[in-house]
Image (tube, rainbow, N blue to C red; front, top):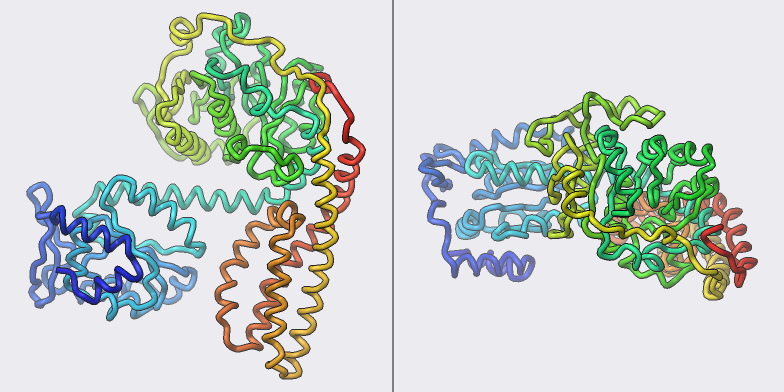
Length: 622
């Protein structure tokens, strides 16, 4: 039976865990998990699995074992970590020794509810861990693990040390392996996302500003063109080496209008080389080199291929492309949703590591069916990275073959870390749309979970029998820029002026705080902190800050957020002044630098909006 103290702590601090323990008590504990006495007299846990016995702790001396386990970690090694995730509680011996030695906040993930029940029946939470225990997650049913990953990765911003209890690796080897694989993959994705934020956060905003003069005049493909694609087959053509094997099939599909063909990335060059013009090309990369993908199309003066661009794409791509333009609003673009304030949230496309994932989202939102993948190798084929017809070469790091993965035939094929990340992202998006029909026709490509493999010639024979493509689907009637855009521009002008005043107020408050600290007038500092809080709240709610500066400083803001609680509870007022000026000053200095940088672009954008209201254009002819 669970100790009374533990019941009270769970009810107060971890009510969901308490509910799970009650349910477990009602439904019955796992009979294969038992408490036994070790030779030292302390209890240990024995797990019976597949006619074998596994001890979670030493059956001789659990405390001595825990001491040896914790001694493998040094003070120097742990300086870089701010949080610990313990996988497996057992009876808590290792956690108790670790916390006593290192005093770090921690979270527990327990994959076996019965073991945690025994822990609560034998050990006191109050005596052991106090306030260092941040949270407890118990895996009792399908979905618990996914919920943990989502919550934990959102809540914990610090660097995390993962410590599995070795007994669990032996007793629950499959569960442990699944967990660690998923956790490692998600941490890698989160790190990739943070790295992407840091690399692109300013480009996304600046590109969105520079593109807006086109975006406000071009059709939103989801809002205005979805009717052409609903319930129609769509082919997503990527640039993998298997693409060259499908040229004859793609030409037949194009000539007979059997499906809409969307090219992604460099695939447009291979298709154009073979005289196949896709129904649309898609692009989203914010980096300056993105335009090189379309140089062949522009140099050949091909003006009949529509380009669907993500609104935060490299502005040179939009500026120099000579064919028809349509846009899709990206989640990294905060400009378009503010000025065109009727962009539904379900029509926003999420940024991803590859244009294939972005386009897959678009096709699903347009309700294309089935979606057919061509040239989506996500692996090397005869050491090739790209299909024939693509002139430029991949970077050296892209050619590094790091892993073997299963291909569509069940064989092993060479892949890379980059390809693996792309495949994982594709699979994640497909898992959110379970049951949506996606056919992978890539011969020799990596197996993609959530798709069914079928050769393209079979798909043509069985599924693509009638013409579905409307040739001039991308053409639009006369469009005019709505007056609401000018109203939003006028509102933003007011917010811009207010932000300048607020930033000046912060500078004055910093001067006052330093002066009062230097004169030792600490009783007046509290009033200044209150004033500072009010000004900061107004800055954080200012539309210019939210639309332009916050997205350009998202990583820095995340770092600042980590320090805010520490600053709030600092009782030493001189130290508090140092921390406020140090942390907020650094963040606001970055914002002011960005403000200076975007100001000329902002002024030009505002003037363009003012001059463009009620100007009408034919979007098909730009």
